[in-house]
Length: 292
Image (cartoon, rainbow, N blue to C red; front, side, top):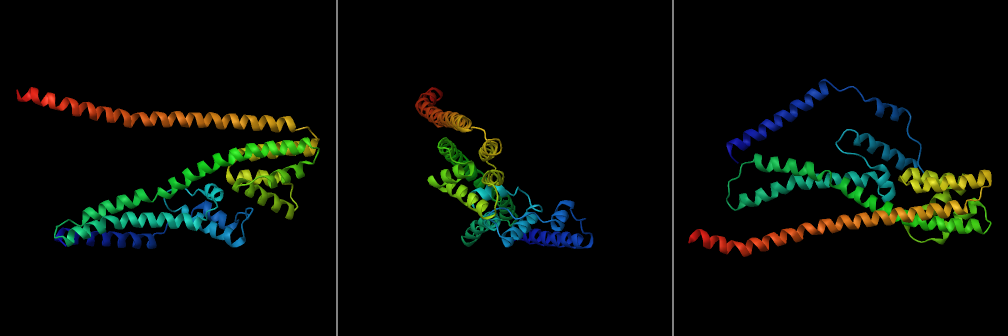
């Protein structure tokens, strides 16, 4: 190791020690939000135990002290825990931090002299970039899951409308329509309705709570329609069919827009390939002109 590298390492160590000492001697005042949450913990959400709720509360407190957003609703939708999310972030950050050191170590074994601050700088930059990779992954997976749930919800509304047309009650229609379907969206609906039955809660309230928990507005709309049917005795068959039809139209419009965007993205590689071919064809002629 060169003298410059040793000096940089010593300076970083001394700076980190001074920062830790200043933090202990002059502690920052406690934040109001975490303090109020500790005094009034959040209620246990559906499908959670007390231990899971306490663990998630601790992870939320930890998330407020680090960069990035804690996607609680996306994790609930994907049925992933907060521990899994932060372990992914830490693993990616460590990989970014250690990868340049491994490469520089290989170069050092080959006899190449490389300054120490270069892998340290690239390692910090890579760790900072890879720290946000799990956020992007969870956001992308949650977006796809919400689209899949929206397709299932459109079919669910049709099933509920058919059961209501058969002169069954609103509660029975919601439960029987959820029992007919297959796939993970229907399993989430079945679990929510089963909890509502066990806790003596109205099924439309359970559907609305599930929509709020997973950030799915269509479930809130379904709950409002079924609540009107139960409270006022309103005929909601036409309303359910119309909502399902509008959902399908929205989904088809979004899919068409996504397909057009993908088509536009595909034009860029074609244009680049045409440019390379034109350059390869014109280069010999231009070279011959300059050599003449």
